[in-house]
Image: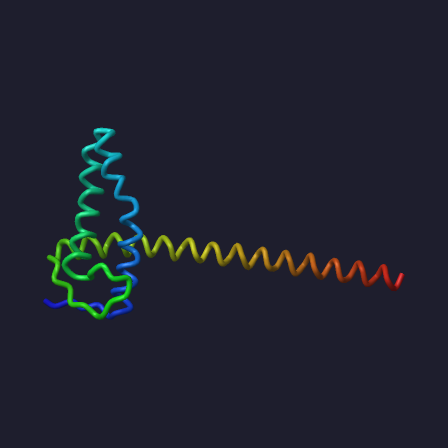
Length: 124
């Protein structure tokens, strides 16, 4: 079965995986703490990410459409983890937008109160 990514999908995935690589010290932290279970889990994640970059996506920030050649089990693990992270990020963004909307409403209420009070004082 052939699975392809568009150029924009490839770029979005690469950006996510590339950003994730900044946390590769998690492997060393787990090893230093003798936390084998955690160490193996994060090592597998980074191994999968690097394999996908090396075998399929390449290292360029912007690329072209690609056909994924990594084994299905690698693709499943990576895309499941990336989907979970994207769903969490979407939830956070919704909450942030709601908070911004509430702050904007409070600011508008404050401005209206200031206008009203100052207007009354000028007339008064």
